[in-house]
Length: 373
Ligand SMILES: [Zn+2]
Image 1 (tube, rainbow, N blue to C red):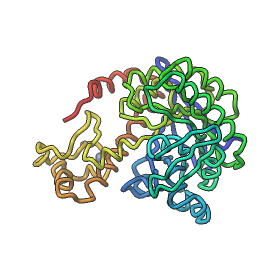
Image 2 (cartoon, helix red, strand yellow; image 1 turned 90 degrees about the horizontal axis):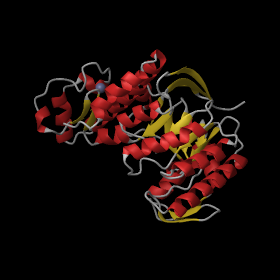
Image 3 (tube, rainbow, N blue to C red; image 1 turned 90 degrees about the vertical axis):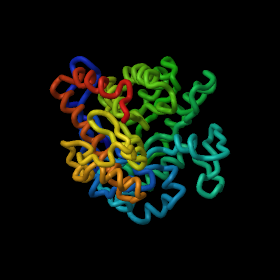
Image 4 (cartoon, rainbow, N blue to C red; image 1 turned 45 degrees about the horizontal axis):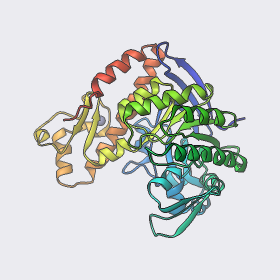
C-alpha cells in the first residue's frame, strides 16, 4: 500500500487542469495545492495555528538545512519533524539537491554523491542519495524527495544530459535504500529546457515505483514561456494516476499556467519572501506597501480577504514597514500565504465547474504584463 496516493476528482474539459485529493499518513490535501516553505522547521514569521487558519494543508521542510542545523539525529530523538515543529499535517521534505546547487560552497559532484562546504560554518559535508534518504527518514516527512543533480541554466547540452542521467541513477539508489513504509518517495525529473531530455527523464523515472513525480530545475532565471514549454514537454510522460509536483514555482500566474498543464502541487518562498519585503499579492495585482501613496489609504489590502492583515488599513501596514516593526513582515506573510491558498482553491473550484479556461484568461489579464503599483 503506497504511503501517498492521489484520487482524481475532476478534470477540466478544455485544459489539462485536474482537481484531486492527496491522501498522506498525516491527512488529506485537496489539489491543486500550494505548500508554504518551512525551510528551518518554521514558515518564517507564521505559527502553525496561523498556517492552519489560512488554509494550508501541507508544508515543506528541508533536508539540507535541517541536516546541518539542528541535525536530523536531534530532530528524530525529539519525535521527528512533525512533533519538533508542532505541525501535525502532511510534510514534504526536499532532498538537498537544490540547496547544494544554490547555497553550498566548493561543491564537487561525483557519481557517489556531492561534497561541499556548509554555508553555516564551512565544514566539509558529503551528501549521497542514501544519506539524503536517511536524513528524511529521521525527519519522518510524509513525502521524501530523491537527491537530484541540479545545474545552472543555460548550460552546455552535454552538462545538462550528464546531470539528467546522474539524477536518474541517484533516484534509483534512493528508492533501493529507502525503508520507511509510512513515507512516499517522489522522483525529480531534470533535463534543463530540452524537451527531448525531459521526455527521456520522465519516461525513465516512470518505470520505477515512485509514488509521485516532480519537475525540478526550473524557475532558475529562464523566461516563463520556456518554463511552461518544459512543463508541457514533461507532463504527458508522467503517470496520470500519480501526483505531479512543480518544485520552487512560482508567481501567481505561474501557478495558474502550470495547473492548466496538469500540475497538482507547488511550493515557493515567493509569498513569504515578498511579504517580508513589503510586497502584497492581491486579486488585482501586486502592491508595494512602502509606496508613499498608501500613507493615508484607509482601505484594507483586499476588501474580501479574511486574513488578520486585512483587518488593518494599508496606511497602518505601510507605517509598520516604515517604522521597522516586525509585525509588518508577519502580517504580509500571512496575507500573501492566504492569497496563494485562495488562488489554488479558486482554481480547484473552476476545474470542478469545467470553467478553468475562463479563469486562466482572466488571470492572464491581471498578471500579464505584471501589474505593479
Ligand atoms: Zn489579507
